[in-house]
Image (cartoon, rainbow, N blue to C red; front, side, top):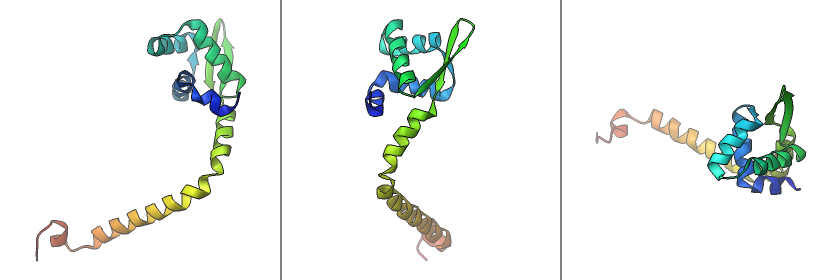
Length: 120
């Protein structure tokens, strides 16, 4: 499954959001996702399996629990694909940052009466 097919599913995106905040036991994931999406434990388990197999989630055993966390490998794949477009928006963002700084500097250097809207 392609990484964007994995991320196209709102349930899997939500699971990644949860795991991005902290590790979670599979039961905790099932509880949250089941309540939010109205799906069964088996369906949540299938989504977790897809995330594991596609490199987006890690799992480790803690006694009888399975604890999930984000695996950055999948995110690196997404970042690499998006990276080919960075040269499109980074110069525009740099130009925007320059204009914002210029505006702040002009406001800071403007006479006090002008800033308050009063006429001299």
